[in-house]
Length: 310
Image (cartoon, one colour):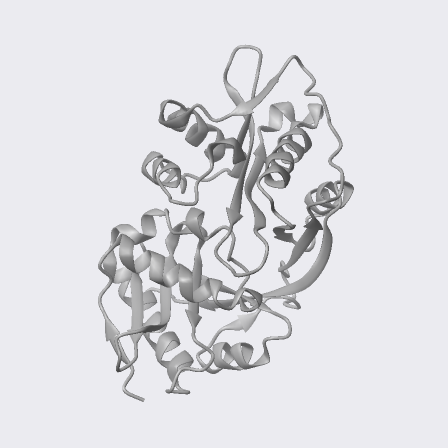
């Protein structure tokens, strides 16, 4: 009991939020790539972040309306004194989703990722109107979490088309990266400010920020990797995001960027490397499987619509 909500106050809160997830890494899809997600412009409005603390002031739960991803990230301590905490968090999520309608942070629908074995979370989501998209009649959607033992050898794929593989050239190349990212994902969600903040994260390692440049110098593929050394066990790696411009996919430069990201993860001591992808995205699945990734978890995607009310 005695769980109260506190306002979001900035970077120090982010570190505490990350620590809560990293204390229970098997419960969450996004662990290794939290520095990437926590750099997003959703945090520009403190109202998009909810935090809950116990009587001692310790963080026991949080939620973020991740507008760029159309998704809700939330976490809570499994042994929090108030067993109704998950319901409190989702009640706040529901209210915030409605408040954000018709603002730059709002969406007509929101999504939540849940492992198939997390039945309690599924029941909580269903109780407030979210529904799994795995078996809907139109456009069913689910994901998988994949893992690759880092000690597996990494095959070298020389870049074709006279392209060059290297690390991102720091802040001077952020705008070029953003332009490529937007083209690859056909979305304007990525911003210069967001990408610049990733470079300022304490967990950012420059040689894990891999890009492929065309002969004329412009960027055509990328693979950002993250190393998580926070747990008491061995470090783990994460791939997020990976992409290649459509005009250069015939050169398999996505595979080149991916393998060149895996190599420094090995050098930095990662024991396992993780990536997520859509379960029906055969091209991406085939790519990850071709370099040694295997599916370890099925992921359900829950959706709730928030139609505008005149």
